[in-house]
Length: 118
Image (cartoon, rainbow, N blue to C red):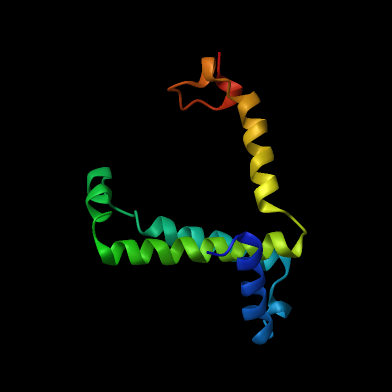
């Protein structure tokens, strides 16, 4: 199973074989990432929580969900590759930051933003 680095390399090879880097400015990649997250969101449109739970057992829904998640990941990988971001290191650092922002004693069971925790 590939790791993020090898997946990123595979994606870059795919892009470069098609001469698409010319279209991949940071602005365009971020816009495309946002559009793909919209497509992910569209899978939820007009559905109740119970309907979404039921859909999770549907193979067609799972295929669509996986495809949209992959599209989001692809753009995120391209953004990170272009800007020299190690996504694993960045994610680990963000967890450490959030551990300080959301101490268990204040955040446990709460959906409040860290600035609103008492």
